[in-house]
Structure formats: structure tokens, C-alpha cells
Length: 219
Image 1 (cartoon, rainbow, N blue to C red):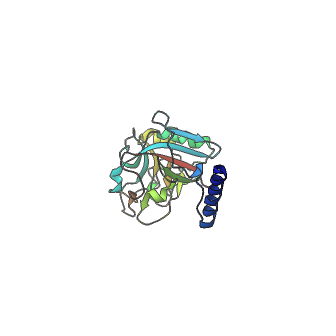
Image 2 (image 1 turned 90 degrees about the horizontal axis):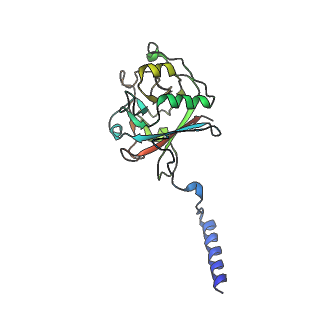
Image 3 (image 1 turned 135 degrees about the vertical axis):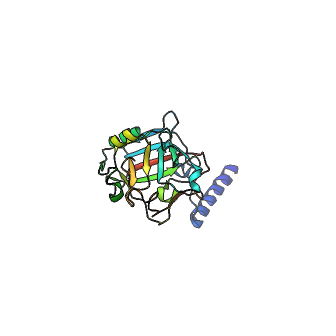
């Protein structure tokens, strides 16, 4: 009798979910968990054609503008970005090359102010422990002109080795950053004031929080 009552209650609950549009929770809807570590801060997923890096939120750039999205914490620009990466720029470059992505390598310090970065177009997402989803770069970094990011694999391995800035992702076209934004040429932020970039404190977790930044070939 008790068994029949439990079965009846279960069937009634399932019918209510169906009638009122509630979804039965699944593993896919569980909050995100971070599996990368400071000792192993980078992961290449060749099947997904993605590279993930562990980074830390720099809350300074909730309130100040910057042209740097992600920079290796040990680089000379390590404290100038929205996210400080535990993975360095050379490991990031090599990881992208493993995915057979094409680097633009079209920028120099001399042509930077007049040249838009080239290379394969990429999707960039950010998530963290307890996040409801992977947020797009457009959601977590605000462009004052509201232009959707066009992040491209610029390459620039030799320049990165020479200048040692640690830049992984830049927010305007860059002759040093491994990946950068083709919407603007170099100097758009710091020289010509064409745009303001800030971290979105309405979505991102607090200063110092760990996040995982995923870069993958745009489908």
C-alpha cells in the first residue's frame, strides 16, 4: 500500500513538471567547478578545439579602463589586465598551435596604429566555481561602444618573447599579444580614447576570484 502511494506521488510530481514547464535538473545544469590548478593552469582539448587557462579576477579594472583582457601574472603587464593568468603566454601560444589554428602574424610595432589584427577568429568564454554557465567575453568585459568582440589569433610569438609583457588576450589589435581584438587598432584605448573597456562587476565574481578562460575556434 505504502509502495503504491509513493509511486502515485512520484507520477503526480512528474505530471506537474510537464504541465507547468519545469525541467528535471540534470548534471549539465550543475554549477561550474574548476579543475585547473595553479600548478597545472592550462588545458588543451583537441576534440573541442579549445584551450582553457586558470586566471584571477583583477577588481581594479571594474573601475578603471584597460586594453588588457588576460595577462600572465609574471609578465611586465601582469597587473594591467582584467584577468591575471597563471599560464604564461608561450604555453598559451603553443596550445593554440596544437589545435592547428592559423596565426595572423601581420602586426609590428611600426604598423600597429594602422593595422587590424588577422588570424583565425576565436570564441572566448569565462566561468568560475558556482557560475551558472560559461559567460561570453562580451558579457564579462564591457566595451563602451558596445561592439561585439572579434578576437583573433594574432600569433606574435617572437615579439612576445622579446618584450616579455605576458599578454595572452588584448582588447585592441596588438603586435605582442597572442590573441587580440580586431575591432580596434593599437592605441585606441591609451592614445586616442576611442573606447573604454572595464570588467563587468555585475556578473564577474569579486576581486581575487579564480576563473577559467576558454578560447576555441569560432564555429
